Image (cartoon, rainbow, N blue to C red):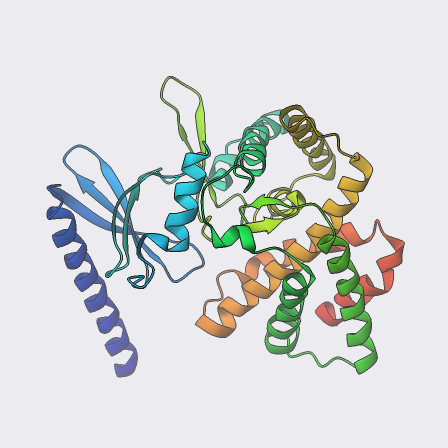
Length: 354
């Protein structure tokens, strides 16, 4: 018990020290602070605070020091690029690279996930998603490297077979082998890896766009727009890279946190494709696009399961394990559509349930 109490005391001391440091930094910017409050963050190690001043609120993101990178830090580089491309992202007001401080626009607390709690019908649900898809099409078209003067590492990174298959093996290790403590027969592991590798090779050959990389219902903020309506703003975009358009679509429409009916997914994919074609002038083969979307969903959901398990294995955080069931159901429903992957589906679920 004494050890636990000491750990709690140290955590509180660190929090108080962090808040004192934040207050002194903000006050140096001639902003009279009224209150500082810790707010929930994402699955990363970053911490977030809401800074209340006399006339407005800000969000202070506290990361590890990035003094070696300065304004070339990926979060800042991608934010600047997206903002310049006309994509709705939070404004950056100030930066202290040494202390890992980034002062951001306060977008409120309503994520798309929370906003979806209020929907009264499938039509209202679809309307919300269509607004988000408008923003996603803009991201895929307007933030493209072609014509951009930005020098982003993200433009040089791609979801190729090596990266996609690394994520597959990450999940096999962290979910099956460490969390579930499963032992595969050599033959079963070979079938599993070959089936998933085949999917990764198909994805490797797809045209690429500039992807957000983690575009789900918790990373879209919904807030009132000046003049009426709602604003949909993207957050947590620092890991952007080139990849198939279906990567972000799979993250959003086959979300681990919110389950859409398959008929709704069909309508929303049609909406995306119609808007993509209208803005890009490029026709799309819907049947081929849909198959790639399905295969991307399998890889993306499989990767998410590995991340959820790794949060427990590496950080002792079990909070995301509750989403694994939904995520596996996404994979099961999708693979049922493709008989060529029936053996893969059987093995994935055999080692999950039995």
